[in-house]
Image 1 (cartoon, rainbow, N blue to C red):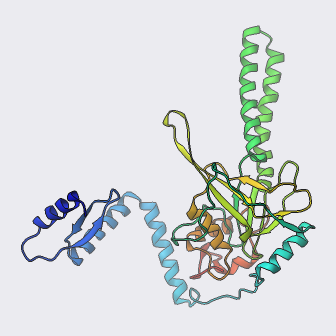
Image 2: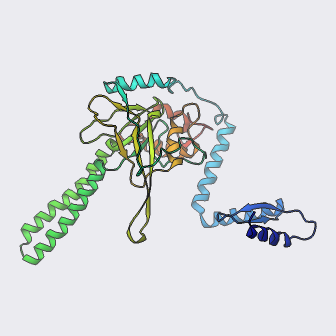
Image 3: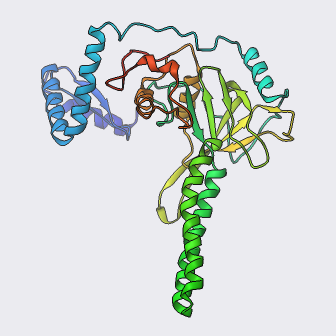
Length: 346
């Protein structure tokens, strides 16, 4: 223990009346600590005050929490909440069986990818979910979870859209400066139409830029590429590498970066190991482990994903929004409340 720690401990102890037991030791983020001397009754009273303040400042959110709580109590009284449903749709195949299934779907065998060493991307992220609270965003319908990649069709649609907006402004300014309104404004109109068209084209192309983690098959479908079609691979054969934090100029913000690399390579059409840059904003260890935990059929779907499942159930769309909501997951939701009515979703 350092001298400063000794001094701090001494200072804290001096605040105590003689023979009074120490309270609970509370650590701060900066490594310092203090003692909480409140009684249990005082802690409960303070908690009630904080709850009352939250309800006053966030009435809509508080009402939603109350609604969900009442519904959950009703599900328990109706003996639905703890009743387990059949899980026949979940795969019961070993890794070897799923690898063979992926090869059949791809139409070719896999070969092992060469070892990967890169100072830029470091070591693979830990695959273990340390906190059940760790998970990923609203990209899950209970059957599939999706994750976007960078430098794909969607990225280039944004680039084209940006240039079309820029050219439309240039043509307007040129028309004003030259007086040739008809010619330049016609060109500007075409650029504006291209700008609008990219919004709809992007919606159509977005599904092709996604990793699709299918919990019911145990396989992942990779994104399409400009010169390669997507392929299926067991989720165990994908590694995620952390690339550090990318900071924008002049302190404008920072984004995580990550890269995905396949540990096995399809022999057909793939001369080098498939690698993908993660979506803008990257992915951290907790999120990556959350995707892998989602694929583990020995544990239920993380409860943090229940609201995402409810969202897509309300839309009656899958997570890609290309097909109807999966029938296998519908029994886990109340058709009237649009809320998960089971303790666990499988």
